[in-house]
Image (cartoon, rainbow, N blue to C red):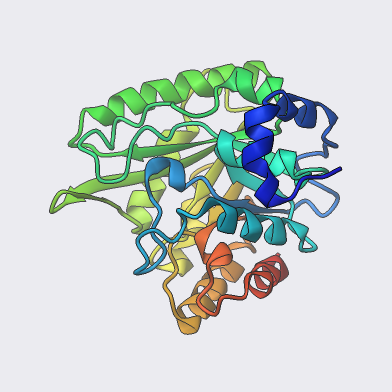
Length: 295
């Protein structure tokens, strides 16, 4: 019998082995289905302490509420899978919500939001061997590069070795690169075409092989420049949603940017989180359906 969301605390306390059992019986699918597109819902923000949505600082802190939103999003037609950390993915496994879905584990969450060590983004989440053991389908890592912060070098080196380890297991790695810098003590990602282009060039060359490397890229401030950005690499790419604002108008503008970028030959889909799970009008199903429609 499939547990309810409210049953999870007791189930976890009494039957920790249930996670491995659920992972073993999960129905798997190819990364790319027949349509060759990916629609992935992202929910790995909490593990970096990034719980805010708009002006609600702890919007993602209620785990049962977040799981309800994720289960609804995953049930919508055209949604291929989910990106999250171990705790969230294992909750979804126990709920039976991951059958026939692409399951992507988030690997480095050590660069906590607002921390002095934010750029030294340690791999505190899934290891390659964890993803293989749980029969998950891919891993994702965040690569923020601050040319003025030595911590970025540690992240670069660890990223390269993780790409190698994932490739040895035949598992795709989705690399999310940014050129970043601190402004008044806060890490900001540079979304100019030049900066995103530079990040793509750096990320594409990491590791001993790029055979299993995918890129997860933001749409640039100038959406018309995305074609030039994507010419920097032949690696398959998905677009990340990011923070698209809290008004319906903001969301419509973001959808139009995604629509244009999705026409590019290397772009195979979307990975979107808070803007779909916590939309301005509160209608998760409609937000997800709209994003799917862009594909």
